[in-house]
Image (cartoon, rainbow, N blue to C red; front, side, top):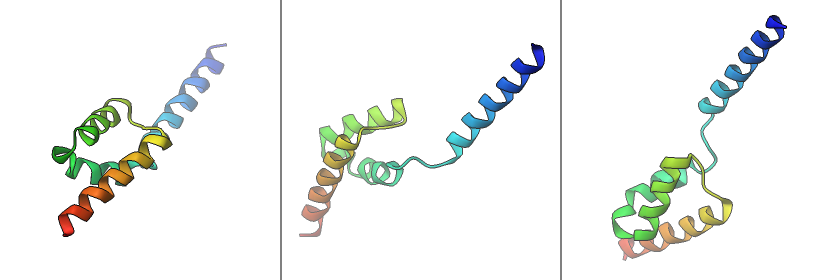
Length: 77
């Protein structure tokens, strides 16, 4: 019984370590959003949420991408 538990613990730790090493799908988007967080309360809120949870929904990611694109477009003109 102890051997089974030990193997389970090793597998669990290995899986969590591997999960932490792989960057999340939205990491690059959120880094761009953090750069513009001062310009938008929405981006500030989503960045705080991302830092707390480590993820955002795909719907939020789409909204963040649109907001970042609008802010970057304003900056170019």
